[in-house]
Image (cartoon, rainbow, N blue to C red; front, side, top):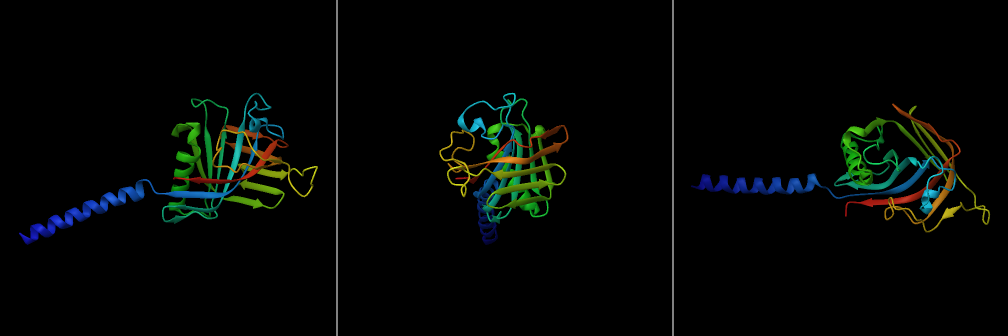
Length: 227
């Protein structure tokens, strides 16, 4: 009888542990914040930021660099990780696609899985892109960030080099949008955008390829959370 009682107690404890484990590992709490910079299709001064149509064939393709300065996924630290998402913001869900680059040298296997979950299922979920049109590459990513210049290089796939525009009123400050009107990531991005120009913006991944040198770019802060 005692053996049965011990067995029953152990079984109940095991069931409770499994239940807690599912809660912890199936949907962990996470948070990421840091610096974002982007190059896109439009001429500098991107009209999309004001709710107007893009400047080139009503198409807005972006390369967005998320450099995480502080982040966690459950118990796992994501500080210093970089994820780049490249997509067409104006494509319909049945035609859209996404390419993700995650830093192969800095991210462990657990961190890679965490970052992919956050960006594929949360940050870019607005695009409604099916998994068969999502490309994920784990490659070395080089990121440089100074006061007036932001740069990201992914092997021979992407080079994005943004120079901020100096304001005419105060040349020590960049040209800014201080109360943006842009629906995507409206709450997660800072209200202030520092505007720039891509001295280099070249992308080549399988059937996707472009040269947007001289086109628009901007820099801002981001904060995404599971809460």
